[in-house]
Image (cartoon, rainbow, N blue to C red; front, top):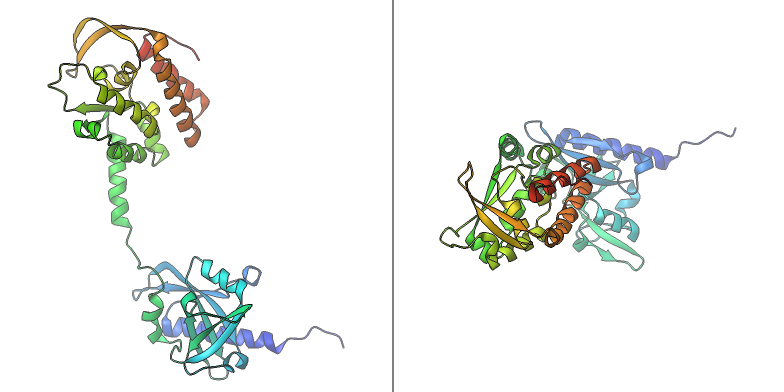
Length: 339
């Protein structure tokens, strides 16, 4: 009668897996998780690491299982010699989890293991080999050695709570004032601003909340009688700021009395001061100026470049992009300009 046959090799493999599963779950007290055959390219299962308190850690070790007497025939003075093809070795070494080879002696109900360490392998021409040590019997005593191959378990919650708290403070802020010291200007230092502007882009909620809410104050020039936009080192620093910092066009505020966006604009244009116009509500001296609109074109070119890149990156609509452009142009030029 012609019927499919249950191969001894298949039974031997299943017996080996049964033995290994029992060792992992009763001796190591970890979780044995089978890898489905359609996804098996050399990894038969995973060991999920459990703490002594029974907590699942998210750490795993991948396993290649070999069962049967044939894997215990070749040996040297240190252990049994295992041979395989180079494609599997390359696969193991690229694997994200550490990989161990386990040889299961079905008749003795014992398993022996080794870590697939490239430094422990040898070339056999077209293939490779590694020794599975006699002393590496898989048991409860193997836990400390196996744990060396996975990174320590960390408690990320305190770090996240601090991160969330800072985000909450940013979300609840009115105008976010960033102070730049004169030494940062002189040293062309943008590191702190870069960190803050990147942080403001961390979540969609922060991006939305902080739009048009940031101002920058340059400190250290109070004794200089010149306006900041007339100080060459400040102009150079601002021009580099516009190239190095992403999202300034989106975050910088156009609110009355906030100066940095206007200062940036003044660095580009031909300005003629007309008269003083008093002090703003936040104590900033205000002046009436006249300027040549054409000279401001390079500023707006950089503004549009940054805003377009920022809105594309974060999926912000073209309609909102246009609203921001028109608001900034009105604030800086005093004219309604439709795009």
